Length: 103
Image 1 (cartoon, rainbow, N blue to C red):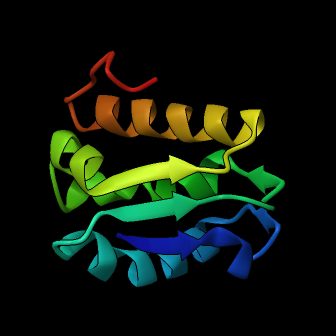
Image 2 (image 1 turned 45 degrees about the vertical axis):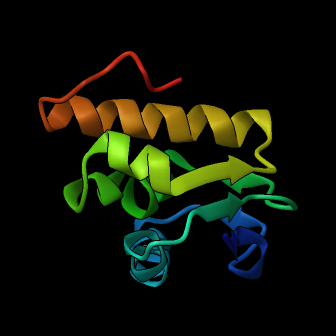
Image 3 (image 1 turned 30 degrees about the vertical axis):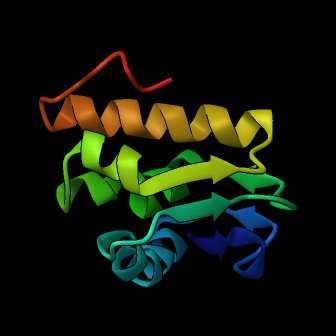
C-alpha cells in the first residue's frame, strides 16, 4: 500500500488548477498495482472544484469499480467527504454512469 498525503499539498484544497496538478501526481500511483491510501488528515477544506478535477476525473481513466478497488480514503472531515461524494456523483451523471453506490 502507498499513502498519498494531501496535507503535503495544503490545508485548503480549492481550485481546479491545483486539482489538475495533484491528479497528474496521483494518476501514476492509482494506475500501479498497489492500493493507494488517499490521506486527507490535517486538510481543512476540499472544494467541489478540487474534488472533481483531482479525484472524480480519474473516472476518465478507469471505471468506478476499478477506482474503488485501487483506492481508499482516510482522514476526511465531514465537509471534505460531502464535497468528494458530490463531485463523484456529478461526474458520473455527466458521463452517463451515475450509480447510487457513491456515498
